[in-house]
Length: 206
Image 1 (cartoon, one colour):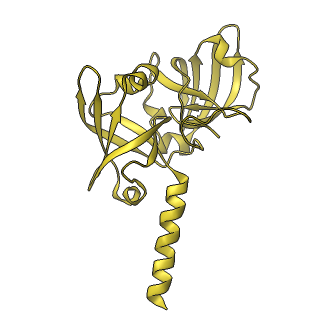
Image 2 (image 1 turned 60 degrees about the vertical axis):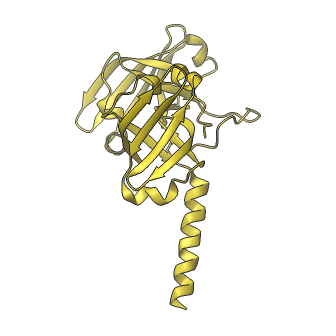
Image 3 (image 1 turned 120 degrees about the horizontal axis):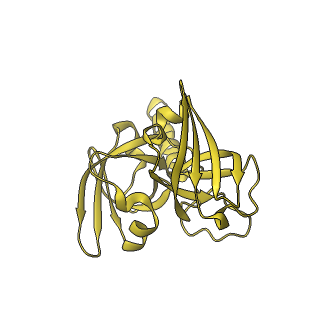
């Protein structure tokens, strides 16, 4: 589990590709790898990945990315030198500054509008219709691993309003129109909406 509070950005140091498979090696500050173990979970752009190798002193950590993950996320579009959002898994006793995040991406959304001023940034994202019932104004959503609050909701997507701190710590400050961002819906919202829909359907059939 994660909180959606991105701890830092990491850079893609190397990529090894094969059919329906990628191995990503990231360069990250060595203090972010302290007490790490093989098999540990780290969220990269919000995707829960398993550590397959690491070198704390060198600040390198490696992950295997399989076909299902490549199909559902933006990890397949990464190139050497790109930056990604990095979050270690939640430990007992940690502060939950965002919301509980599983690292299981449902889909990606396209950034279709970007408006920035000195202290404000508004993003509008296009999202597939099947996921929109679970996106509520002022509700939680995870975008590229960052726990965010939904702004306005539209027929084709939703808006985000980002503070300077979020833009500086995460890769969201580097995003451009046309980019695709990983989306994880708030599971509590999904459960509530699906439960209400099921109950309503049962009542209509009674």
